[in-house]
Structure formats: structure tokens, C-alpha cells
Image (cartoon, rainbow, N blue to C red):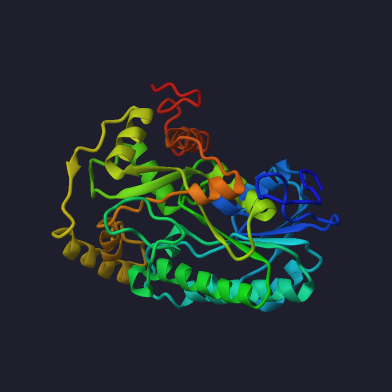
Length: 361
């Protein structure tokens, strides 16, 4: 297999886990933003792919990718057994990523139960090393706003909202599987930005809204922005160089939301957001938005959980991934440029709002 080696004494010298055959590598969530980027990275490194997607998935991100397609659902154990059959390695990227869900039961069934079921199926079929895509949402935050890392203390009550709680509990479940003998490496991406965000994700919607000039005001918080292709390369490094059972933050640049807004609007030729909104008075507004969402079925623009999360700076350090994996992340502005160029190509932004070469209209 391309890029693989049979010996390793240091995680940065060579590959830690050789592939002894030409079996395919399964990627779950391959039609999604991060999953498709991981698939592209694996193609670049010479792996043979099997791409799992739901029957109802938007297939645009797979249009140019080689590899076999298999229909699977994390809530259907039989489909998982078929998806993992004969695979050498598993990249479990699929997740239910929504910041608002009126009933978290379905999210938990995918993010927790489905994760366990997939790895159990892979274990039964004889798959080797596996990579689990967790999230920085499953990790702790510091009290002073300094960058957190994989060892920052945290507890269940620190994880606000159904998504964060589900990813926290899923990571605990994966670590239990590791304790039973499964060879799984965990990666914790920060907020990915870049091409291929076709849904888009909550972060992608923020970028798109700011680029359209629909972000006149903001609630200040801190985020770690990372290029989705750097996250994808980090996944491959986790397979080849990561230590069994370890977690690795795949992050980029720590920025305040006001800085992010100014960066996007400058690139897109729009006025920057100028009004900083206080969190406290917005809480009852968010409650009303949630009530209307339950009636209308439309996702609210703002929730109380979002505002609660905004009270902390979600800053992270990728030093462990840099040190052990050889991970590298480019500047956040490059991620924004690539995201905006992709939105333009797909007609979501006016063609002259942003040019791929970096020039603004």
C-alpha cells in the first residue's frame, strides 16, 4: 500500500501500523463534509476505498471519488456488518451533527449506539486499526480561556447540549472498547472550514452568512478554525502514526468570533459586523426561537445552549498531534478563502463576491 512501511521505532520516523494486504478501507459518513475530505486524503495516499452512505444521502461529494459505494445506516446493525466485511481499516467519521434537536434520542442512537455497533462489527470481521472521529466538543475547556488539550479535566456536566453530550459519551464508549483490546485511535477535530461543505454545517452556515453580509451583529466567543483538508490529513496520520487508545486534537488557529467575522467579510467584500450583543438579554429571545422551532419544525437561528457555549472561549492546542503525528495546520484565512471559493463555485455566493485567487470584488 502506498505510503506504508513495515517497521517503526518512533511515531515520526515512519508508519506505526503496516497494511499487509490490499483490502479496502471503509469510510463512514463519506458524503459529509469531513468524511469526503478524509476519503480524498486516503485516495492521495494510495488506499483503496469503500465509502458508506445512507440511502438518502446527497452524493455530490462522492462524484469524483474512486472506490466502491455501500449503503449503510448506523442504526441498522445488519447494514454495518455488510459495510465492514473484508475491510482492513475503518475510518468512522459519520455523526449526527446538529446544534439543536428537539428530541436527542435519535442523535444518541447514531452517535453513541451506532459507534459501538460499527466497531463491534468491524472487530467481528477482523478489521485492524480503526480511527474514530470524535470532536473537541468531547473535551474539556480551561477556566481562563487558554488553549485546552487532550488532558484538560472535564466532567459530563461540562458538555452543554445534546450534540456535545453525545460525543462525550461516545468517546467514553470507544475508550471502553480500547480497554477490551480494540485498536482504535481517536481524533478530535476543531471547527473545520473549507471546500465540500454542501449542507452546510453550522460553522459553514456562519461563514456563508457573514460572506453574504447577513452578520451585522455577533455574540463574542472564541473558536478554533482549521482547514478541513488538514483535518483529513490528520486522520491518515492517526492511522499510520497514532498510539492505540490515544486522542489527538486536530485544530488550527484560535480566533475570537469578531476576528473571524472581520476576516470573512474582508475576503467577501462586505461590511464587517460591528455590534457586539450581550448574552444575558438574548436568553429569553433564544427560548422563544426554540419554542417556535418545536411548532414550525425549522431549526432556530439561536438557542440557549449556543449562548451558554459562547460564554467560554473554545480554544485548543494541537501540540500533541504535532509532536506525535507530524500534524500541520495552515492559517485560518486559507481555510476561509477555500470555503468562500467553493461557495461561489456552487452558486451560493455571487460570482464576483470572492475570487479563488484571493482578490475581492
